[in-house]
Image 1: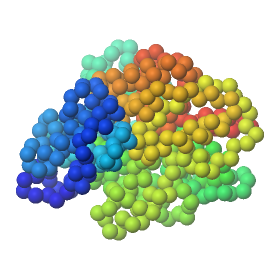
Image 2: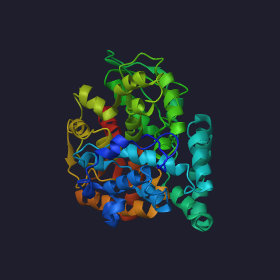
Image 3: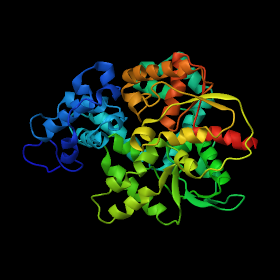
Length: 434
């Protein structure tokens, strides 16, 4: 966007005039938007938010508390992008608007400090992140967590802290970047050489999924390279208005990964994969990175996308399992990956994949949305759990760590008896029996 005197947007990372102009305000996005379906308020819809962004861009409306609230009320699930006949990249708009809000008076100083502390100082620095993770693991497994919840001290201190503590997944018993060497060769003939980012939160909270992913890739004939000194991909920072650090992290990872010769970079986190596929856009203003970052993004594949293209499952022992599949937002709406996981799962003998009503409807996790917008997140989650309960599935499959944690919490709170797994974990269970 061209910054002019009448615009109330300032500095870099401005919402794009071109994207704003694409919206024809047809309303096709309305029924796909979870927040509009909570309020039925036009300003809480994608086209309503685009109108707000346009008004601020043209100097007709200042950045106000209402404007900030609406941009943060959005889940950024991007279901509207799937529904949009004009192909509006709404996610780029709302994330650019959040950058403007982050630098305004409508982000309290304490909130800004906390986000920058975690998103800049902790999450990108794996040594600090793992130190805190070890402390949390002790807290969770020593009996201290049960005692703290029993006396209710967190509720007295802060409802937000109490909610975050309840929503936080268990810290893994091992960290995946510590148990695997940098290069792992398959037992048989090598078909592919792939890079595997362990991730930040995946590495400390979902390391079992990383382990399953690596083992499945090895069984598929991949030489797996796990680069040392990798850092966070930058997606959490970008979605929460800190594009400066997101770009910095993108460059760090790009510089590291570019040292290797590989066929694909495989991601098992829908949000991380989606963001790495956008490195070309994220770094478009830097001529030193733009073209090569686009080529880098072309090599990024979700693990289920890769398996649909290249997996050759054979001689797998049958298991009788009733499962259903929740489509993670950043997989189906951002990466446009929908049929591929289902095609892979249907190759597993004995797996009865039960259709899920509103399978592409957001679960309400959305990064840290379930912490900062807890009440709205729970309303969205309850709708998801009600649909999941109807399937009577014993296993719920989904390809994003945030969804796994959120749906596990929802099963506990809203009474659904099912195991929640990443699809690659179920695949590895099958392969481990053969």
